[in-house]
Structure formats: C-alpha cells, structure tokens
Length: 225
Picture 1: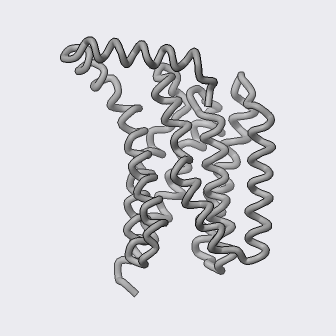
Picture 2: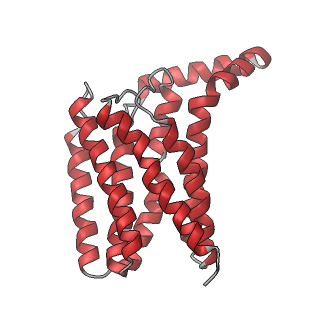
C-alpha cells in the first residue's frame, strides 16, 4: 500500500465531515437559508447517500462511518431549509430525493457497489452546479451560504482526487478533482466577486454592464434552483 493513502484518507474524511458542519450551523442552528439552492441541497444529500450505500455494499466500514455522518448532516440541512425558508421548495423535489434514497438502499442491499460508485461520481459532476448558479444569479442573497464549506471542499477535493488516483480509480479521481474546482469557484464567487466586479467596472465597463444585464435577464427567465 502506498504510504500516502492513509494520510490522504484521513484528510479527505476530515474535510468531508468538517466541510458539512459550517453549512449545518448556518442552516440548522442559525436558521439562515437565504441564497441556498433547494436542488443543490438535495443533490448533496443524494451524492453523500450514494457514497454511504457504496461503502456498505463494498464492506468498507471506515468509509461507511464518514459518509453516514455527512449524509445525516446533509439531510438535516434539507429538512431545516424546508422548515425555515419562507418559500417552500416544490414537493416534487423531495419526492425525487426520497425515490433516489430508496434506490440507493436497494442497490446496497443487493451488493451493487460498482453501480453505486458510478452513480456517486456522476452525481458529483453536477451536485455543486445549482448552488453556483444561485450565487451567480442572486449575489445579494448569500447569507445562508457558508464560506467554510467551500474552503474545506476545495481541500477535500484535491485530497480525494490524489487518494483515488493512487489506486488507479481514475474516474473517481477526476470526479473528486472536479468537485474541488467547483468548491473553489464557489469560494471565489462568495469572497472574490466584489473585487472582480470592481475591476471589470473600472477597466471593462461595457463588459461589466453586459454581464450585469445578462444576469438580470436570467433571473427573470430562470426559476430558483
């Protein structure tokens, strides 16, 4: 076994659990839900649940504990968002989420570890996009979005990418690296957007106006995600 595998596993596992805590603190304890994507929250729950089911199907106790904890935290975020957000998400979202959880459970009980890992990786490629879209289209309403989750998500994405890459699981490694890039992009939107906007307004005012007007039109055409 490569000596790096254990420290990478520990780092990735720590960032998985700790990365879910800031959002839970913001959503569950402080009841701040402004700017959170209903679709993104449910996708996050499903992807973590898929990895949990994979861990059970493959007999990996360590991964099962880590993914079980993160799945519970993500589920708490979903419930808190539905309870505390003034605009209730479509019921169809929750029906689809419950159906997905039931499917993961069925696959785990029949030992379909390969199918579950494939589903989890594919979901990982899209899980962060709804929240990124919300950050782009609604930059003024981000009180409910925890910055710490994006910081730890960036670190964890790199750690898991190297971890899976060293074991020649290139599909999983690519998915993890992509997740890290998505997290870094979210961090840039949350913390770097004012600076970027100011620079564009000063140096490229026409481009700045075009981007601002395009975002305004998109907000009128696209429903909240």
